[in-house]
Image (cartoon, rainbow over all chains, first blue to last red; front, side, top):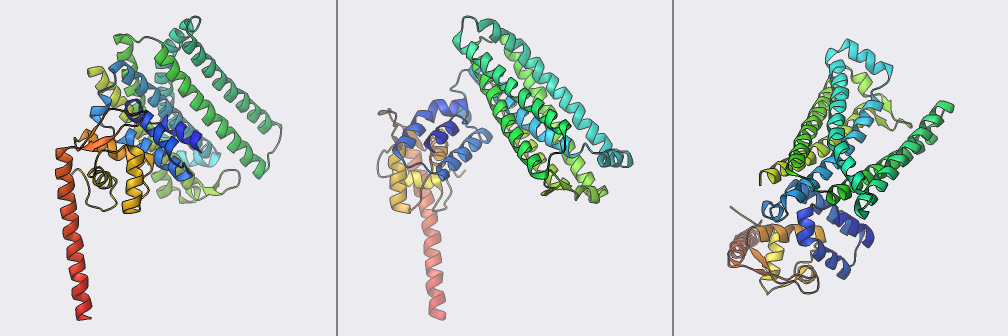
Length: 295
Length: 106
């Protein structure tokens, strides 16, 4: 539990960790650490992100704040992508397409979520590709950049292999309810681990390379685009859910998932909450980046 | 503007009350608060309160001793604590008086 608690401390904002990280770790060494301690730290980390202290953030150099903000934004984008995947899987059946034809707002919202997801993905790729290129070029002589590149490659490869296995298994035959649930939970766990690996790799890579003023400006600008796109996706998903509940309550109440434990509306509600959380944190990260750039 | 709540279990109020007895580091604060108020402050809650109190100038950090940094109350912190405790005291006295009056009429 103590090891888990130490990992949670790593989730605090950079400025907070620099100022209080060592003290918190000393306190963990001195105290009895329980599950409630881990939850308390997680709550503290979330609060530190959502209600940052301006004086604390200003003590960290602007370039490092921009790097930390960009990494946080990537984590938020991946969380939203996972929730978006849930939205897409829930609404991919024929019944939803027919409902989209009957209720134009539903059809528009479904299409808009997908178009916005593509726009956001392009902005993320535009931000990552040039920086990944610099980190790769540097990886020949820099150990940290090499570690970041290997970690990113391993994370993407693990997710690709598990996804390919999932697709093959789904095409080969019918999975039972329990097997389907187990596969879904397993894939989600690998996806979350791979996402976390990519975020850590991006952070290591960003801190291993030098970022000129132009690249900082581009990174912050694209970060703002990603955050705005996330807000739009969350808003359109909320619109979709409201219209679905109002105009197609039968569809909204249908069971969803391998065991049908949740209804469509509850599944979409959970996805929406995750999207709103990711968007809120991303907005904060983007604003911090802008503030750091102006400093 | 109020910086700390008058709730008797508010972490900020508990930390300021603990530091009123003299400078302490994180672990000593949690021990003192647990003994005096029976409240177990987790590290996230404790450092959330410490960071906010420090940002607002109600406490200040002293030089680190082996990864443990003691904090002490500032003059502004002492005033804020005094104000919060007096307010809490008014609530307690009023509540007790009303309870006693209620018992007398019952």
